[in-house]
Image 1 (cartoon, rainbow, N blue to C red):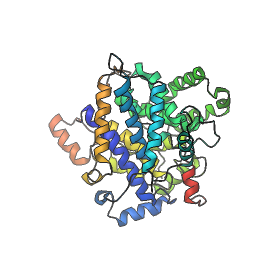
Image 2 (spheres, rainbow, N blue to C red):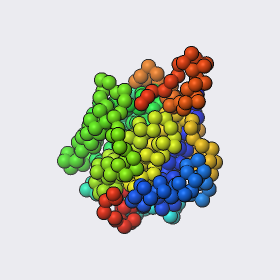
Image 3 (tube, rainbow, N blue to C red):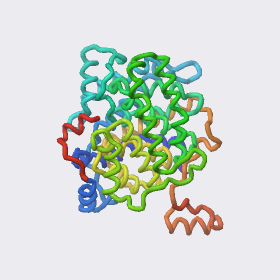
Image 4 (cartoon, one colour):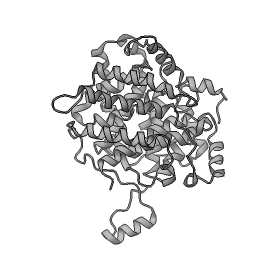
Length: 416
């Protein structure tokens, strides 16, 4: 059973692994046919034989690292007497500074247009909270870099801090509700993992907590009236998804997937819920697709990758988001060693995860569930089930169970 600090590391590292594999130096992120990607994977010997030594992380991991660095720097400079930290203007400003700084490391990493435009404004002297509302600001560039807020601000008593930090990190570059609510959702779902909330309850739990986002935005006042026409879209998409999978708050036991739900069917559905026919490229669908893959994998890392990081959409972003959640839930269980040893920036990821853990240790995390911090067990294979049965008298058996029109790579990148 992985301890809490190991799961912090797994959150950061497996997010990067999901990103690296989904990106494959840009080749797989911008391949719009999942079947082609899976064929290439087979030609490489499958997931167990992947050599990631020359595979770069994308902008997703570079910016997730920047978010984590901002949290660490903020804690170093503004820790309260009780060891806690605030989600205030000082934090948001530090986040913006780190986003600007990380652009020195964006060569061949495909950053999105909205982020590039915002960073250019900051470099000219604009403040972190002056990014104007944009109809095209609903991309996934905010959702894929905000998971680590959930490492520090989990717990019922920290909901307002988690809300402020994640929403403002999103609005820094993506000032549209679909964009910044993506950041809010990825942070909240990461927090749920550390609160011991079972994954099947996450969707309903998130719906019950949208009021935190709405109350924060209304009290802040910035662009509140402008947001009204777009504000409920994200929430409505979650309701539709939970209805599709037949997940209810009263009986969240199993998600119902179609009988035919292979590579082609997944690509078709991913595209159908997107804005532009590129599944995972927006704030809402990046989170929903990642969550769908997490539920469908049943605790198996390679199955998560097949669903969440190897498809014809924005595969590196969904790989990064879902990879973080997988690590938060299961640690490194079922992850092959070859997926870890050559990950770019591995030492930085480990170091920042350890620093975030130390910060989190000084913060009170009130429980929302009686099994707070209990890692979720992954599904056992047949051999493990047999061994577990011998040890515990049968206990431990796990829960049973296109392509759209082709677009240019730069158009897809701009969707972020």
